[in-house]
Length: 505
Ligand code: BES
Ligand code: MN
Ligand code: ZN
Image (cartoon, rainbow, N blue to C red; front, side):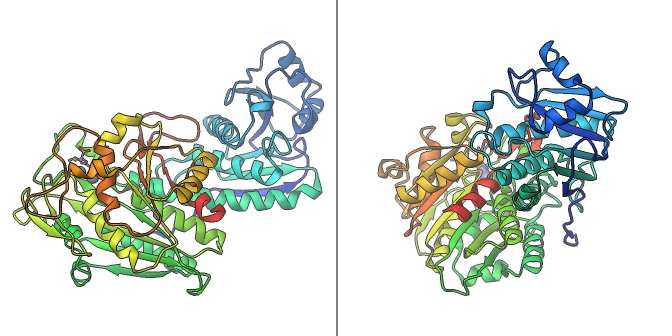
């Protein structure tokens, strides 16, 4: 497959005008709980409609829960034929997450009504803690991510809407709105790339495909890129990564993608993403039910590539290196097997107990490789253990492990700010005791059903000698229902958190 030219189907513009005068297939305004006489931009649309919104609101006919949407078909008074009133909930509880959710709900309703152009206010600008730029950013993110639909193996998403117009009559605010739109567009671009990569079938989203996407990003943003193949990995002594790749039909790739505006002056932040393009379990084969979901076992890699796309578009001043060890975990006559002993890039030997504990093997070699970069800090994202899903729930939070509380605090702050939830779990020496081997330095699995997420993290910690955070996002990659700005399917989890960490860290 040729690499995709990634152009977004949907356009966002900022217009200096009044909502009443702007022509669009649907006009979106908002209403807070308990308001019967709306002010601001909703107020001026209300006046142009002869008080219709206020009348409906005071009669209790306009629900104001976050994401509640009421459609008003109007004739005259304003330039647009449909007004969607979206609830923003209690004004004191407004934040960017509320704006993203409400924007998504309103935009999907507009699309359902057949709208190709949408005009909206930047929800929440100047209210609560949100400034105009943050409001515009959240409105763009919520709209684009809420409209996201997987568009197929060789193209970007199909939003079904051509243009989003952010409208404001207040000239001094336009600059901030444009800046917010730039951040929102860059962020949505990254999340959409991550979602596309996870949604693509595993015979399309192969290690080579991930490498081609990385090369495309390098071309678009001037990144440095190295694509390592099997021979390259051998010269780096990556015996653990290569063991996983031994039974794979698709050739493995080890991607090194570097954004360095500092020209080597700054030690890099390193992002590592688990890139198992399909996890059959290998010889320790998984049960057939649910195996298809293991096409999402490269969601960490997708998040890292998505974050690089956003950082490139933003021209972030920070030096960042992305590492993506990419392979399938399959089984053939050459496949690695339980009882094999393999050697990672730092000479540490590993006894294979389960070929299904493959993620930690390829991450071990990536963590060792990261050491050569003299990193300031390393964050890895991986769909690593079912145990993490048991511990924290599905779609609730990712597990967060660390060897450095200062870096962990910053990652936690990024996760909270973006509502990409993480929760701290320990990786203690006691967890490593379960991995003591008679024939190697350690085993890749305890073979016991206890604390699996922590044991896996303790395994990884063995390969780190720098400040490090590990995010086990096993429960976060896929959803089977649509909620807020997360449609069914791939979530793109991790992109927004990583970008926030790099740009605010
Ligand atoms: N990719 C899986 C983990 C996973 C499970 C991701 C469910 C998403 C949803 C990983 O490679 C795996 O198979 N882990 C094993 C580890 C065990 C063999 C120690 C697991 O969780 O069962
Ligand atoms: Mn596995
Ligand atoms: Zn896996």
